[in-house]
Amino acid sequence: MFGYNGKFLGVDLNTGETKSLEMEEGHLKDFIGGSSLAARLIYDHVKPGMDPLSPENPLVFAVGPFTGTTIPMVSRSAVCGISPLTGIWGEATTGGVFPFRLKAAGYDGIFITGRAEKPVYLYINNGKAEIRDASHLWGKDTYQTHQVLKDELKDRGLSVSCIGQGGENLVKYACVVNDRGRVAGRCGLGALMGSKNLKAVAVTGDVKSDVANKDKIDELTKQVREAISSGLMSLVYREYGTLLYMDMGMLLGDVPARYFSRNVFAAKHVTGQALRQAYTVTSHACYGCPVACGRVVKKVGKDAGEVDGPEFETAVAFGPLCVNYDLDSIVEANHLCNAHGIDTISAGVSIAYAMQLYEQGILDEKKAGMKLEWGDGGAIVKLVEKIIGREGIGELLGEGTRRMAEELGADPTTAAHVKGLEMPMHDARAYTGMAISYATGPRGACHLKGDYYNIDMTGSVPELDIVSGDRFKSEGKAALAAKYQNYRDMYDSLLLCKFSSISLTQIAEILSGITGWDYTPLDINTVGERSINLKRAISNRLGITREDDKLPDVCTAALKEGGTADRSPDMDVLLREYYDYRKWDWATGKPTKEKLLELGLEDAARDLWSD
Ligand code: SF4
Image (cartoon, rainbow, N blue to C red; front, side, top):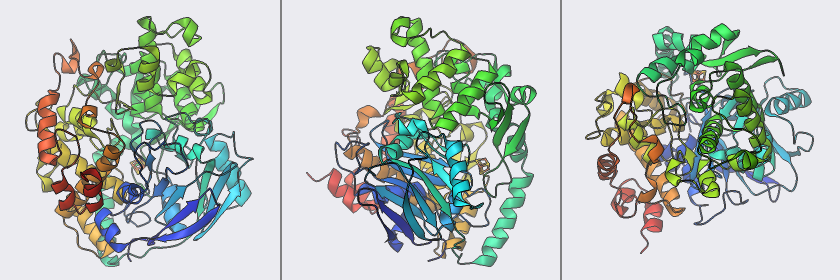
């Protein structure tokens, strides 16, 4: 098989056994890799009502056929499982060196079940796997864990993916962190890893998976590398990272402030330029990437030194969303989240919600144990520490906004989440394509499979007839957004960075050249559609219905000013069109039997429609 190692590492932490799991060629052709293949593997283990923190819930790391090749921007991996935060399908992707090293260690992924009796880590070296004692690592942060393992294993090529105290303490949105600050952030998969007593996965090796057509891949590598390196966006990303969108996004009304109740704010204090003026900033790249969108900033004061700088989502979540324009506190909060492994989006939204409830008197100083005033950067940092330690009010904030509303008796439509996953930092009022993507995204409110703002600004996918349109129009948008979700889902299967400018036609050529199997752009869209429907079927089996495909009022109620003044997406129009396009059943929210069978998902058709 070209482009694959052809096997996953199976790990049973109950018994301490490891074994090779050979991949079926049909599954690779139909699901490609990454999060789609992980969904295929996890599907058989899903049981209605299962506790996401139970040992039976598999944790899957997966790479794809692009990983480890010469194509740029492909050192990415997916981490998947049933989410401890949402209770439904969960996935997150990350970059760095770890994905490249995992493939070079001899596997296309790792499938982990069970729970170890005491903390362990997994060491994989050129196809050989060992479960080792990690008692000395438990309690260490993600940077320390990485360093200790590198020193201990005396391997400069070693790459480590691990949890911090957030995952150890089962914070519901704990994340998995690799290579010093590269994060698989969303859905709480760090808590799943923590529940298994698995502190880290350390990988090394030099296994090469061959490509079918080397000349073709060499030529395509040259083509896309030149285009990416000389592209204007690459230059701007290198200089300012994703923060480059802050002021333009604010003008468009696309950046939420004061817990989604405002969209006009002093953006100049939290832009990429502001970060550069306040700190010495250098850029940081994933393995083999010519763009280098990552930020490294020199921090002074407590724990002085170089730390990962905040990217756009983080800077908004701890910044304008909390009415906070103090960059030092944003940098510090981001650093704490990366060091101790919790998701910056869910943490920032939960803190902003707490500030809102405090202002409304629903959460008082006695219950919070502290004042929670808007814009108090010191309070934000303190709350992040409390969330990580599950201490005081941090225990509740670490459960996310849905649980906060339930516990505090707040109006549930004020909790900014979809299906339990906190809303990202693109405003649903600014693009109807984002609104429908948030409502229907496979993991809940997801800006990465449904980054439709990129289309309605100037983007297009000509091969799928997806073109830029009126960003406020609800009619005619949902079918395009659904197709775009299919397309973006494939990035997490191949795996390919979403900042890359490689066209769908080139993606199909690259995939065909690597695997030796013929894919057209439309085939790739079908694989994406299959993946989205299988993930939906998993969530349906865990209780999701159409009633869950909704946005909270706090994120859709029209605002009075700014780039979205008096605008609100028409969710009924969007949802009906979406269901119609997807061929999902309006009464139940499940993909129809016909659609599942058309996509070759016979088992899902049987399980969802057995009566
Ligand atoms: S653009 Fe950024 S996230 Fe994407 S591969 Fe490059 S460094 Fe990694």
